[in-house]
Image (cartoon, rainbow, N blue to C red; front, side, top):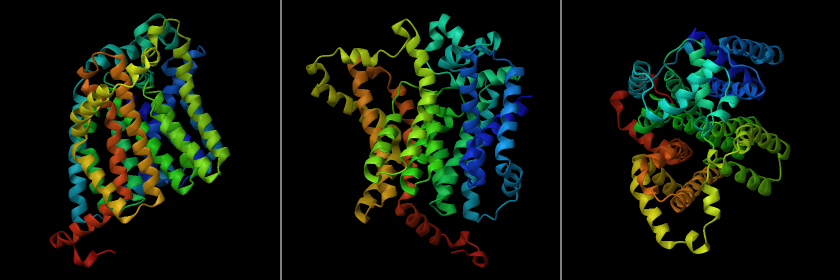
Length: 457
């Protein structure tokens, strides 16, 4: 039953992406189907529950089937999922060096999969919040009504909890498989985006780098919000970049949905502001696609405000995030504190830069190379995305340090929040000529791994 329920969610996500065209690669299409499907399905649960529809297996199986049927009737010609699956399963001829990289990736994924399905939910925040409220909702059938009565339920947006609810409604006992599937779908989409700009070996090399990052791999095995948030936010910026560079309006709308779903996963972190500001900058420079940008902003705020309005409607101020209120009460001399700036920079250096490690080094090396060789608009736009988020991240730490005396005692929280920079750093490398030229030199230095009869340009 769990398999059928998850397949319906994936098919629902596939249906949602049909209005945006049918030009996605096979892996990208399948990955987006899960990422969009589980996110929008959770949002529908939340919205319809607020309107009084009880969360039961029968109700939401019916809704899924009806929506999939509706999309098929409207966009039937674009429903070529079986043809795409045949193409995916048809197989490709990989060279030995590529098979080695694929082998390492598969080994890491198998380890993560076994860990995810073997252990039950056992991490504190999930036990007492994300998974606990999912169990209550699956028994009671509502979210909004319960959250109003139990203050602790209202602290975080409910995307992951409602995804857990679906597993419990399907008579499952371990929702951790959802996070492995998030990771699997993510690396599929990420690889597809790399292949748009790099040869296959270079793409697999960067993909292996992404999969082998301990933080991401570890988070694919337990039920925190950080991995889904990282996925929605980073892919949202990557698809936004597609629009800024290639004027792909379908990518813009997908970006709006992904960024919106990131706020339905975690909302207190305003990194989405970078996307809005870049769209305004684009309008100032290009003065085009105003209608598409407006539609995308409406899509984003439809998802964002659905939770924000509920949060603001709660009577007790303790339900919300008091950071901004506390910050507004500070005096000028407290806000502009050079000593605190220094302390924040030291904290950032010791706990974040070291956490990013080799990936940050590789990103910095590519940026330095591009400054020397010259930057095209693709690199400039994405560097703006990275630097904008970096500035917001540092500013957030600074504000947090002014409002919480114990801010230095939770570096692991800041590290988890900074996870979304990993895919951004790696994706920037795919835009740089340094990766292609370096991997090409590496390939030519390994003649024993090549088959002279099958050399390709």
